[in-house]
Length: 389
Image (spheres, rainbow, N blue to C red):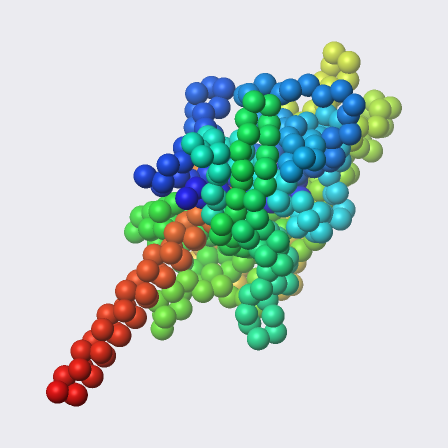
């Protein structure tokens, strides 16, 4: 079975693909001949209402999707943006949940080769904002996700240019953003500890800076159970992220150019590292307000941390920052939290990778418990058999 881990944020969808030896599935190669095991595209999906459609090339540019899903046409990611699609910057919570299947199918279609039988059987690991994840818990502590139920066992017929397959979600696990980054930091994608030093980072605070929200999760070791434990009373989401930075820049650009630039156009400049927009043959920099507003966001995050968890951020030994907005906020937040470190590797994909590590750990623990229960039952049966003789 193929494993697809998808971190659905308000700004970007980040995906990570894994195949296991002998499962018959293969990860695709991109146009550069590299394995397409990680993927990112804009969280935008709109119905394709064009009267004239062009068949996309078999290997389109990453993030450029026009697909037919169960006989309905969609533009997703960069393709949607090109045709005036806009993110729901201010109301992303429901948007992220309701459109998740579109993003998951799109990622699966682009990251895996077509199976010989045309059916791609997926174990889906889906990451959502911590506040959304938390809402799925019932009062008795049981976890019950409507999102998981809406995807579990579902099959989708998808075509993209010359490619065609059935994508089926045979298993669906829902995870919280921020928690994935934690597991990515200490475990490899096979669920084992990365190193002795990494495993020592069990007591950690993870600050995951996204586009609409910043999620904070706190972990420790439950010494009695010898297991990682989320300190739920210290975890929270705040409605502040890179959106707060980007939405302040259009006014600056209008004052300097007289042109109304969209948030997507500004975001593109942030992602490609130019921190500028094109005006005719010139590039107009917005680095000044980007830095200024990033510092404001860092201060807002710190004040919320200080208000809620001042003791934690002063006493916990490891504090990490991850997410798409981490590199912009980190220099300013570091001044206020000296122990703060930016998560190793690619902070943008930390959650998606971490869900795989978490899943693998869960599977290993489940197998060990099943084996222990079986051994206990066999021993009990043997004892009862001897007593009856």
